[in-house]
Amino acid sequence: MKIGIIGAGNIGGNLARRLTALGHDVSVANSRGPHTLTALAEETGATPVRVEQAAQGAEIVVITVPVRAVPDLPAGLLDGAADGLAVIDTDNYYPRQRDGRIAAIEDEGLTESRWTERNIGHAVIKAFNGTYAQDLLERPRPAGDPDRMALPVAGDDEVAKRKVRALIDDLGFDTVDAGGIDDSWRQQPDTPVYGLRAGAEAVTKALAEASRERPATFRG
Image (cartoon, rainbow, N blue to C red):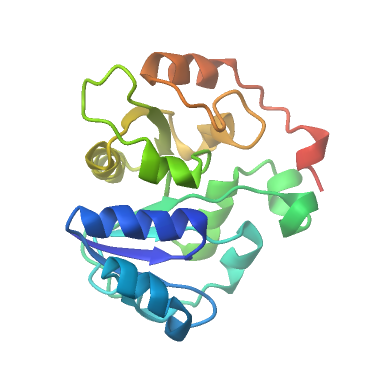
């Protein structure tokens, strides 16, 4: 499968490592340009590209950049992607530590991913936002293993969600359907499921126990 990754930080870099190891054709981009991705490309075999090129022919695009950087993504970012494109959003809103206050999230009550959808003009699937990057390398398990972790996955496009859940299964993790994008607050920072290393039953319980109230530390 052809996969584009926009953002080469901890999550983006480790996804590139795992996905290339699984045989996927991976392109990776960041805001600093392809020349800064030489080491990752040599390590993984991923192709370093400009952000504008990351979605070309891609069946899945992963957006893993700071929330504040989403409006700066190029117009037409997803032009040239394959039909049936699924976009994975891994972002979290950190107003005090990184992103500054975003009125649409705080005043209108949009989830981070709904806000991202508005900015890129395409539905997204929320996944990996509460996953420790190192777990992508160290905690994959075969299906049926009692120690296999489960990850919550939210999104409105059921076809795209199935595609993303199948990819996560290939990566060595179970998934739990966390509802639509308007429900993705259940997996935002400081909720019970955020960072949870557990199986599907515990993840389902943690999602149900989440409070919609955004803690003061995660408000601008």
